[in-house]
Length: 125
Image (tube, rainbow, N blue to C red):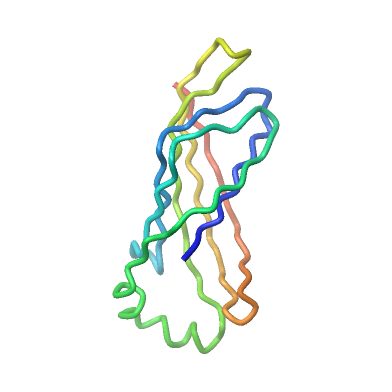
């Protein structure tokens, strides 16, 4: 499975982040993980990352929700991503920050599209 992660930085400062894990949940149970290499996103820009997800098929296949959801054609999952890094101001000032994003995603199995509702939180220290 491929994870397409969009990072949007609307701020006037860049953000350099460490290696980051995105955890995928199916009905509250961890079902997969994707590790993204360290990198950065420039000020007022966006970045798209394509990454492989290692899924635990047993978790999903043993779920009592799977058959009804396959029948309906819609598979709900959720994700949690925590990015630890530094905000870079004027290429000299560095502020430690943690960005946590959670998403509720519905995958439409027939059209192979998805709808996502994501919320993010930034903590600076």
